[in-house]
Length: 266
Length: 213
Image (cartoon, rainbow over all chains, first blue to last red):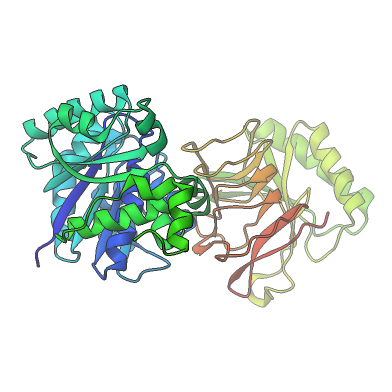
């Protein structure tokens, strides 16, 4: 089986690593792939909440690496998709409870069972980051169109290259087409110029994300969310399909939507 | 009248046998006498009283408790012992001094909120004057009483005691565990209950009921 370990990372906090992990994982599961999500943010776990699986946690990643339970016991099966599991982080421990070596063994063990292993990385470049990238085949770098986020993403890409992960790909998250048009926000091309890595996708700013996060239901599950559509496209690109980037123009322009409704446009 | 010293694992316990006396007055005088001996004899601070087959009212219990207190000791529990052979588990009652909630082992009181990532463990009971937030864990060998909102994870009877209970002013946990039973709220519809509730095991299942005091 040809399984892939993808680490979702960013350096900066709050850019949407966890949201991206949850949505990409769910989107891949929707395409009948066997997916496991690993939360490596020990002490500040969130992925379980975003997935709505918090109340099912009995064992966590620290229990697994310390041998308190079997890996199978700690894996939480998703309530919507049979073929998706979550390995939650511990909340009452620290990042140092797991070593990069243990993470590598863990991901290798999971390779036998799953097509995709999505690792949600914590913010920062310390132990948690080192753990998260330890067993990864490739990285997905999430950045928002802000100077600070792009700066941190650049640092992360450098560290990933140093760790031997050369083929990182970029997701630009929370972009606001209107602001980009007005020139108030960094453009996609500006960001690519600086980071010079392959662009995997663009996700527009979307209020639906807030709602879906609070409900514990990833946005890709619904059809209404623009961000959800963007994540579905990214998942297809990960699977190697040629899908155009989510067009920012069609997304928020009321006039185009109206025209589309009247079948005037396209 | 006899004073038994039971070497019971880690803790020696003093059991005062009052089963031979029938009236409360007699019991009180005897108790007073034997407590004086206990006080002289040892370092114990907790005593148990064995009253045989008799039953005491809450008020009589308080009086005995007062006698123990006056001697600078603490009443651990009240026992109704019979000859071990004809013990009927349904008839056997251990009336503890205060109520069903407090039983024997030590109780710890926490006067603050437990926030995400904080964890508290004790072998005895826990009383919390505060909330348990999601992501916090509270684990007790005995019972758990939350004088606030329980929104995190609580595990009572962690050493396997199925009689343990979890009570909270607002019982809204991510997960509840009693002994080796694990439960969570059903998916979907949530409804807010705005009064104190109590979780315990009945017929092998964790059930939540209104807390009646």
